[in-house]
Image (cartoon, rainbow, N blue to C red):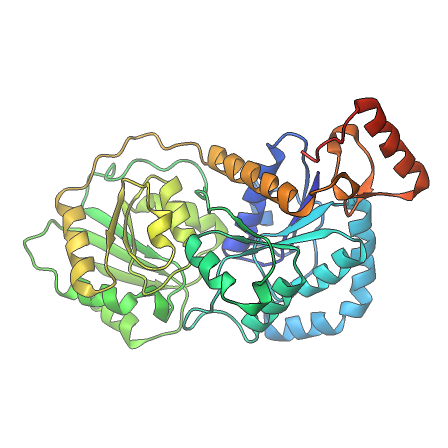
Length: 403
């Protein structure tokens, strides 16, 4: 099967997830995988950045997006030619973005099956950009199948008209690795280091964290805390900055700084009010960090089998109690985390099997990468190629499978 994975965001988790998914799919036998990223994606500037077969010029900011949208009639045909050269059978959107409908139009013209990974079925308070959910619903309507990374998101998708009657595939968000393996927690020999990392938005529960920290007494072991990420200035951030042992860094954390930031921390704190799943959680798991997280949305599923996680309710008293348990009696770490590449391989293998079952049920539309047939949209081209497929089936005595 020829698979195209695309995500046209410039920064954040989207390009990283797309690159890891493409790498995982390449480990599945019989798959030819292409990656499409924005030419401005931060991950492409890294020394170990991924190979991008289809770089696409995107935009900077709202004005840039509008300009790019106006020029789409001029750029859609070159995109179509480049896609035709790759000849994918299926295209996977790793995380929805504003320009995806342009890609979908081109893929539809070529008869390529489209799978959309939905990270958030609903908009979180303070999150997103104008028309984000409207664009996502249009994208979902044009997809052949959807992928939900948690049962929480799957339930919400099944309730939305745009997703009805579409195959809903299940997957999970494996650990995300940034840089070299960090030293084990507390290897620095000082007070425990706590980190709250990510976009500093209302649904992240920063007000709950502030109340929890303000109520902690002096009988607990000493600690340091950094709150790092980008968000609008607020009274909550100012209150957090006024607390002892707390440092607020309201800034964008670039791709090459995420690894050192996680390596600094001993534990990651996720005091969310709501969540679909968390990319920060995936980074913390990969780094073997302790985690304090609230039981909301998909976080409970994400941490179900993580013994280094302390789960609590989304209220200050429960968060405070979980932090106290961690500070007083942190659980032992194994010192050797599982290889995240194995998790991505497993997810990729399960995903290709689900795509095969949902979208390529018969040989007339199923890819056959083992024989190297030149396919586009899963269908042989021309009478001669159809004849070759027929002869192949006769020789084998049965209908071959797509995988």
